[in-house]
Length: 224
Ligand SMILES: [Zn+2]
Image 1 (tube, protein in one colour):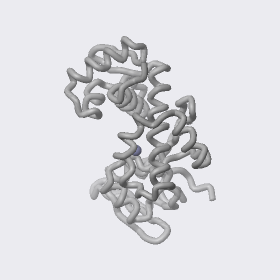
Image 2 (cartoon, rainbow, N blue to C red):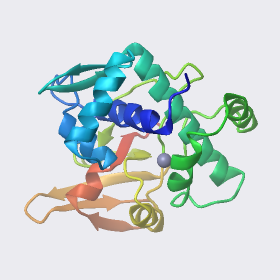
Image 3 (cartoon, protein in one colour):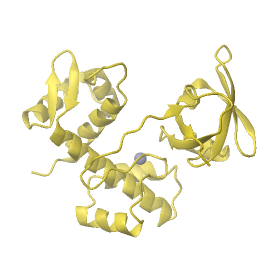
Image 4 (cartoon, rainbow, N blue to C red):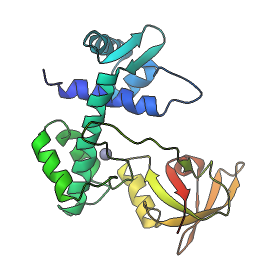
């Protein structure tokens, strides 16, 4: 049986929830799953129980949910389709990086494996989508690596933007207008918690952003 788009959206939400778990947490809280899918907790619980019955997830009442190996693989393949479609829409179709996420949300459920392998081949087997998100391999596996964000990175150290952890079009335009897209070099000059301000120096300019925005900009040490 091919998973429906609803099943795929649950798998993806739980998968993304798992990768954001902190402090040794093992299960994604059900409230978080329901919020990510914009459904009531009751609806989410019914669906997650069905996933557990099909062997795609482990559900622990009152604690939360986590995907089985089979569930993780399916979720990885949905993300693979999503991210390859986004890159295709930007590189081949000439769309802007702030308008492709919503298209990919639809197309991720309908593009065939054959088409996605052609796209992967045509784009030269890319490793990252336009937002810097890693593209899972044909088995649905992702190489996980820890990235600092602009709240946790060292000060006055050459860094490079690696990933933008927010798909909101307005936020993406803000990032682009301030030369903070993946690949751009930058340094954090100062952080002021009281003022909720992070002072960032890019190649051309200095910009002050708030903590929420700073937490969405993932960076790595600039080796060049
Ligand atoms: Zn996207």
